[in-house]
Image (cartoon, rainbow, N blue to C red; front, side, top):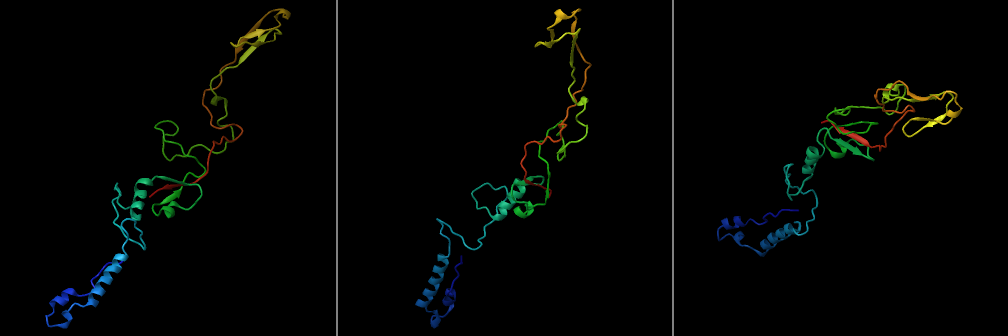
Length: 222
């Protein structure tokens, strides 16, 4: 879009003496001036339906602006950098492995949590520290599968002199051949208690992989 500039020195003509022939305004002067005006007007955008060409500029609003003011590319970048992806943010992409610093045009980003999933922070317990790596994809050895990891419990032992039978719903032994036993002695007993409720996180077979989806993941560090 071009700006309109005077083509004829009208004030210069006024300064001339009345006897100077150049002081006379001719039809060519008007034609030259109005042609310049027309050219400038024709290249301006239609206010009702603007169509910009080239690289028109606009003032960049403050990042906190909340109005219908035109948003420049600088404004959008500032908002993303300040509010959407501040330092410490996580960026994920399902298809593109390009560093977000290149994609977004700002910040320092590092690949993050490769081979891991994210879990929400909790004020106490296992997840009470930020940026802490926990757990493992696979398990081997005896750790996490000892008797101490199980809840405390006992086992029922039933007996009798050649007695056979079964347990009822109350875990009581009911003999079914006492008539053939010379001394009708049927009993049940508990073994000593085992286990201390330590718990375990992996199966003895190997892996307890939770349902997951793989993505490219980055953390902004600066």
